[in-house]
Image (cartoon, one colour):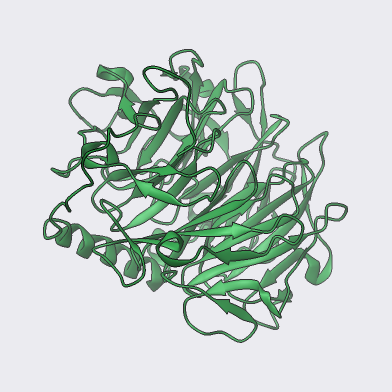
Length: 487
């Protein structure tokens, strides 16, 4: 089966450009001296991250050695540079799933909700991989997996695979967390004909996947395909059926069999609002974020062309203009549905938007509250250790925002004002984790690309491609002498 899949060197030139950029930013990191921090006020501890001690704090692929980390299977190159949503937690908090592009597998971990630790079952219960490689359960269409999602009902896990240009469907054992894939054609949708897969549209190099909160829809964003594919999900089986006609996908280019949309070139990140009304897509090449309205009955997506359907850095007819969105990547929505945050690799930024609930409209926050940039930019606040941001996450309590930076391998830690939605980096070493001298030390973060928080907001998990690792952190959720305060 492997011979039928596209070769790994068929990735678009854009991917090479992103990798080159990451290498450049790694070299320039040493030139960015730590900036003076405000003094005279005790820094708040809420939102701080502390890596678990010893081998509990990180797991690396068994082919890799890193002092102080435990060993696991099927963890080669998790969260590749195109893969900011490579981690997914089950709704019951029992399992963590990791898309590992170098292993052609999904690694499966049981999770202890009390202490955040991870354990991998032996044999097929611990991973599912292409053709069953590495002793994993067998799968088809899983060549270069880069994004994974769990349905809110906990019944299914879905993954995108860049090389096979496919979306795979897995049944989840709610008791053990193990995954199985049907081989009757219902377990895989691919852009081209693959054994055991049906053909879908708008799947040219899929990069990100998301399931709607009502369990009815699955959406897939494709980076070189410049498109978002829309599928109906059967709640009883998890099977996917692409919407008919041009409702089945929306793309930047006309004549692709999809509806035509704006600001959809280089789709890398995606988030669905908790109310299920809006789908937001980070589009790296379009330098912006596409705003799509979701029909809760049909699952179809539509986009306004009057300036409310997209926000871009470079002027584009039909879009509003924002700032610092070149290389827009990961997107996340706050739990209260009021704010949206976007990481942008080329601008080395985290941008902040206010969301109008009914319409889903995004408005970039005014002044320095709208953008935070590494090495400074006019009109924006300054951020440390955010020089190639990929993954981004908001804590469930709304007090913190975290950004994963690929090249230096760091996690930036921000306080979030729960009234205004603006963010500010914690001072000194509390403001970042990694190997940079200005950050608190952490293990297993080289090539960091994806972050996920558990539902309680107590533990954060990070996937790092170059370390072949998962790092586990405990998050401080209360002040030493009182409850969490709004920042």
